Amino acid sequence: MKESSIHHADIAIIGSGFGGSLLALVLARRGQSVVLIDRAAHPRFAIGESSTPIADMILADLAARYDLPRLSPLAQYGSWCRTYPELKRGRKRGFSYFRHELGRPFQPATDHTNELLVAASGDNERCDTHWYRADVDRFFAREAERAGVMLLEQTAIECCELSEEWKLSLQPRQKPMMTIQTGFLVDATGSGDFGRQWLATEDVSETLLTHSQAIYSHFDHVVPWRDILESSGSLLYDHPFACDDAALHHLFDEGWMWQLRFDHGVVSAGFSFNRKVAPQLSANPAESWSIWLQKYPSIAAQFERAKRVDPPGKIFVSGRLQRKASRAVGRRWAALPHAFGFVDALHSTGIAWNLSGVERLAEILCESPDDTIRMKRLANYERQLQRELAMIDNLVDLCYETLPRFRLFVLAVMAYFTATVTYESRRIQSQTTSFMCADDEPLCACLDQVSRLLREMLHHPESEFDRAEVRIRRLIEPYNTAGLCRPEAMNMYQHTAAR
Image (cartoon, rainbow, N blue to C red; front, side, top):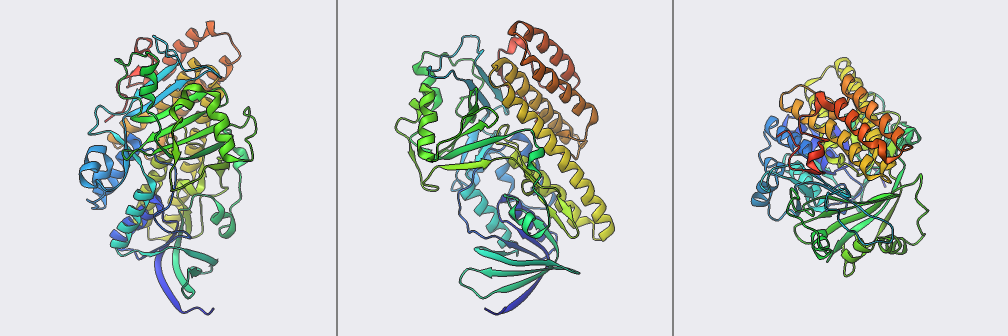
């Protein structure tokens, strides 16, 4: 079929998830002509649904800086519900963790030695949100269209070449081929395939520490975990928030299970396994799901009447979750964080990190018309992404390694919150540009010390954990504005976010 049309654009963005669509929207608001290309169409199933205080801060700042008032309500749960009740979402007050023993019903300890709840907000009005991605991604894509972005869905890229500018040969579904000529390309995809095929990047995932695999879907009729706790005689009076209004983590030796509850009754749920120690999954996803549920009776009770919902209508099994590309920028192209690399759903860094990339790339592309200056700024952006991915990888792998010993796991989680709360505080004061302060050498050195100590303690008796906890509390003291690692808290943290 012959090419029937040629279109020119300042910037072409590949991938219309929330990151690509938001970047397109921002650039269009600054007068750039943008084409947004996706091989699929909205709405579509996606995971990576849990927002955080950092994500909300960045989204609010983007809305204010680029005059996007329609996005501002999405930065807090209360304003989202009032402004866009049709956009499905869930309430997220914080993070909750529950340690399970193989084959035994969960029995909460009176001193919370098998529980951890960390509040990220003070109330339901200002709290974070679980993003029902089918709705939210479509909303961002349509907002980009409203701003004048050319959105090409169900469009395959047949060829992508760079000479003086990029030339993309596209095949929209059931339409004539078309050509896009553009001066700059952004990879906003989520698999790394586009970069390897067209941008000459290499897969260097083997350099990452974390090695995990997931099995997941969406379900309804999942019994709230709070109901299971109450039926077991648990006293919940000192929980800082309802444990289901959270990124809920069920923990066991080989991995963990996430549960994200949306207001319309659907629950995003999945097991994520440490492939260094977990047995291989069955070739049948439904069978694997059932096998792992039955290992932990209290979780199985939650899913006794649960049904998969459509979308997606099936259970997915991933390969290795970790991805890393050899490059994040090149001549006349750059990648958003999620296209450059990914570690794991643990700690809910995905949405926030990708939004931080949108923020930085938007500034570079809007304010650096000179190619030489732009490339210098892009090179710095790439260095930041490298350091940020390494920090996330170290903190996540540390948590996987400490899963068999819950007290050490709690301390590993405290290391993560040390980084996030420090970033939140400095962002409020406009003192940082790198995600989670990954460019702060003293902070990184502190977290490395914590990591080495906890990995060493894995081989020591529990009688030595008190000493390790005291040492970690001293190490993080210069950054610990949220009262982390306090023995008197008994693993129940009322509020940690800086805002």
